[in-house]
Structures are given as C-alpha cells and as structure tokens.
Picture (tube, rainbow, N blue to C red):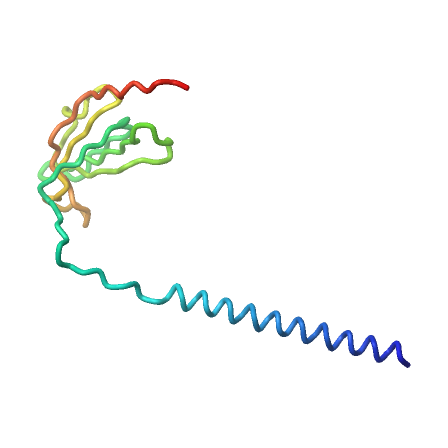
Amino acid sequence: MDCSLDVVQMNKRLAAEIILGVVLGLMLALCVALAHGLPTQVQPKEGVVIDLQADTVLHGNLVDEKILGDERAAFTNIRIVPWNKPLLYDFSVLLCGYQGEELQVQNPVEIEFEVQSHRMYEGIGCHRLVKVQHWTPPVTKGW
C-alpha cells in the first residue's frame, strides 16, 4: 500500500510541475507579446533635415534593364548588384524615360540619379538619371 501512495504522490507532483511550467510559459509568451506591441518613443520632428536635392550614386554591375510603359510615357527599370556584395543582393531603380542608350556601358558601372522622384508608374516613383559611366573599382591589397 505504501508503494501505491508514493506513486500517487509522484504523479500529483509531476502534474503540478507540468501545470506550473505551462503557466510560466504562457506568462512569458504574454510578456513577450506585450513588449513587442508597445509603441516606440515618438521622435522629435525639429532638427530633421531631408535633402531631396541630393543625388544617389551606386557602384556595381548592371544585371537587368526593362523598358516599361508605352511610347507616350516610357520608364526604364534597372537592377544593379552593388560592388563587393553577394549576387542575391541587388537594387531595383525605376528611371524616368527611355534610358536604353545611356545604359550601354561596360560593367562595373557608376550610376547617379536624383533621390526625389518626379513621376509615377503604377504607384512607384521614377528618378531622373544624372550620369552613367564605367567605374574602376578601387584596388584592394591582398592578405
């Protein structure tokens, strides 16, 4: 009879430990969910300067070029893999107008375009191309 009481007490203790573990786990999950749902601090707006007149310069390999739109409103979508980055990492930039002749440059290239978008194509802003030229990467010393 003593053995059966020990087994019953052990089963009750195990059940209590499991219930306590489940309750603690749910409390931890609730705390994590609440912490991720809290709003961040509001950033002050004074002192923030956005320079929309600046140009962006990308160095890398031009991997794709597509002409979008029609004769009245042509757009050029380019994909460029930045220099010294993995091939899976690329930028897609929508340029205003047909830029086929300007983009006939040997890789690697330096592409400069305005940050501010001037027109829209299906909800995506297009940028004015400033300059495209062949770019010689800097020489890095080996190990």
